[in-house]
Image 1 (cartoon, rainbow, N blue to C red):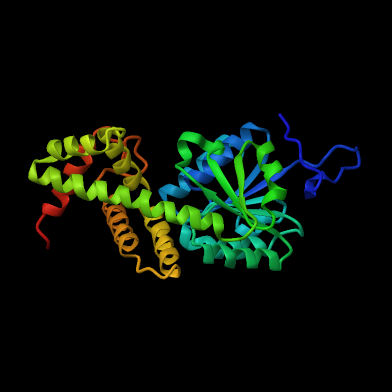
Image 2 (image 1 turned 90 degrees about the horizontal axis):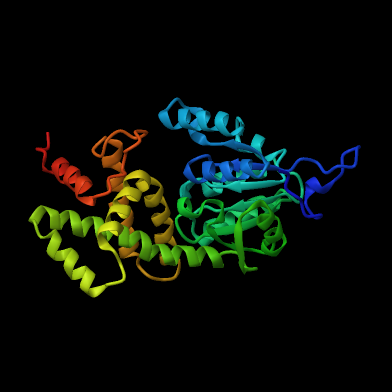
Length: 325
């Protein structure tokens, strides 16, 4: 299945036989989100190349990426610059702290007019700095704010677009299978929307883990859950708690980096980010425990996937009860 390309994209230029050139996506970042996008884009017949910093060092994550690339026909590049050079569209899906570095590296290889879609969870200031780096090299930067968890929706995850090139790239993204909506022509607006939402969502994850792990310690978890159900009857707190534990165990490091960007967003608004900073610390703390093997071995099929949050809370409590050496 081939994907039609709008006439204002670089790949609409015809080959000698009159057919359009093959459309190519360059992914900078090949973690969970990058691999999901790669799978769906490859299923649509789109050529995909990818680069990730973790590919530069031996690790289980790097091994996972290489196996995945072979399975789905993704070409792995040696750098973000090399991946960006032949691309008609570059998608940046890295951790929040790498947003600007990724934009600069990709920009160095861009052809004039190439779109760069930045879906990273970074502050409005970071997005504006990234845009400046891309525009300086003749690229067309578009900030993307992913408005909910990617795995359930995959490529169809709700995506707000921002910046002066948002309207131009929207038809292309729809043809590729995305579900974009133009949020604002001004850079930073959709990222502010994402960041302010994350004060609540990522904060709720941290609060649920802290509340229920403590309740488990005191043996009052059933009473706490019953009270929560009475106050918020529309939420299945057992399932929600299990999901929060799962996501933070699996992705706490990435989440903590995002919430540090959230804190900067709050600080830029003139508020002291007490909640965001506490959330970032709790998420990073969970990431440390996960990396120490408290919740099992990363890469195992059941890692961080316990259907009952109590299993993970008990592991957490057992770890912190150990004597400090």
